[in-house]
Length: 98
Image (cartoon, rainbow, N blue to C red):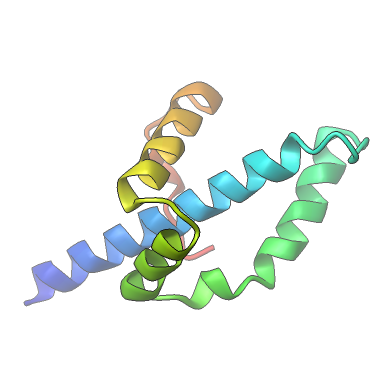
């Protein structure tokens, strides 16, 4: 039973992070925001810290993805692509409750 809980938690963290990555990519490419990268990320992160997504469980995240027109697989692919380009490290290193 503990194995399932760990797997569910990992899936939840990955999907939550996929939403964060997707939101960052949308925010980052907004042509109206003309700040340097550190300022943009600080601004983005302050908004992310207040997001209701951060407290959603796997079922709620899956439902949100569907409501927004995405599959879980699409969001996870976006996340995987982001990390493969942005970081030379495996995405698991970045899993956290943030």
